[in-house]
Amino acid sequence: MSLVANLVSGVVRKAVPGAAAAIGASYLLSKSLAAFTSPDAKPESARSMKPLYNTHRPTTGLQKAVIATGSALMCFGDPTDGRYIASLGDATSNGFFGKMRQQMINDETGRRILKERPQISFTPEQWDALATLPEGSFGRSYYEQMRRNGISWSTRPPVRFVDNEEDAYMMLRYRQCHDFYHTILDMDISVAEELAIKVFEWRQTGLPVGLIASAVGPLRLPPSERQRFFAHYLPWAMQCGSQAKPIISVYWEEMWDRSIDDVRKEMGVWLLPERNSVTRAENSTAIMN
Image 1 (cartoon, rainbow, N blue to C red):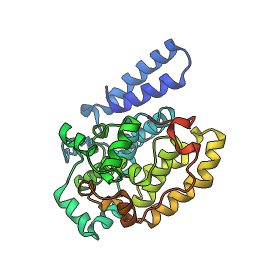
Image 2: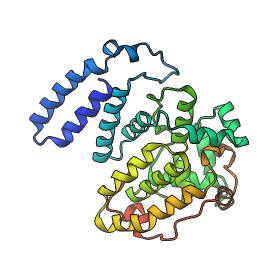
Image 3: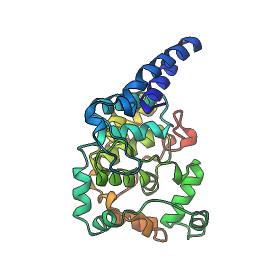
Image 4: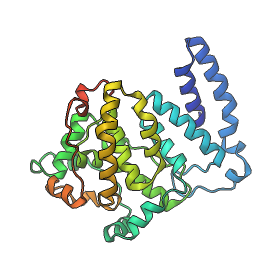
């Protein structure tokens, strides 16, 4: 079943009361959209496009709009599903990579990343080795945060709807480094913290997905947490994201044994002073896993 059909199917299942109605409507919508998203039924403008990289799925502007809308609805209904966040990012980012590209070109390390194209990957031995690094090192802090939050480095979806090969790599790099931003900013995975990270990323990269998430996401927060988000998280993330070094140009794989405090100082980031109940995932009433 195509991605758009899955999106519509999921939205219907969440939105239509009654199991029979949901299943029936989901089936009909899936069938009707199958032709729309099938490679054989694509408009000429999409059929004529050849895949530009292994995971690329050429799509028209209309198809991207459908994917973005469905993904946004699914993200609001279930923000724990990274597939839809990734699809939303892919479908809305074409034409918005200029800031990231300029940041990388203007930086010696950024240029090296674009040339070498590193990807975040660990063998079991490499992953376990992070646990043996000194306390307070970046690598050890990253390992402990991932273990504490039950997150795997291998779960980041591939890029599919970005229509430029270099842009697709920048999107992949941004996506694979997302958990490093959590570590460097000392943010766990409550909804408030994820939204703060998205605001930080938006100020850093200019990609629309962060702006969309920060505009819609606070609606999921209980009133008290929403108030804290707008009073503390949002202004901190805006200022920190604007003033920090462009983190897309950081070769994180070369930072493992460095002091995390030194890395933060070099990056020009600072931690949110208000470390209260909202910032601890186990105490939040709205959790992203």
